[in-house]
Image (cartoon, rainbow, N blue to C red; front, top):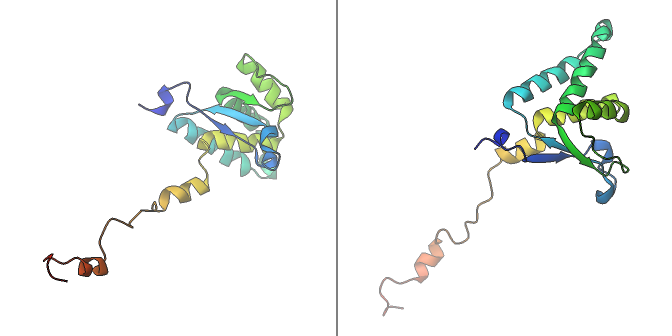
Length: 154
């Protein structure tokens, strides 16, 4: 069954800037999985935002609103936020996120949501062959030589 059809299937994200904190103090964002199309839209938005030059800065406010929308639409909880409870509505989430995250953190979180937490390390792991336990899968030449086909011969 596709993961997008299971609403309780979530994943967690910790901002890079918080990874050096003790594990029980790290702020954790709990995100829902999104569709492939949602990932594409989010990543296109991140690329658009990060490739703006000084001549196109007038587009930035709208892109920031869209980044905020990606976050508020896909965030389903958090913990270790200095006692801040997760709000009841997306509008409240959007307002809190707007006041809580820096632009850099918002881009990072929206990018992570769009990539579903899949990063280049995960890609490397998925591309590398899995280690196989071949210790007992085949007999060596020495093993074959020590086993006589005729039991009375030694």
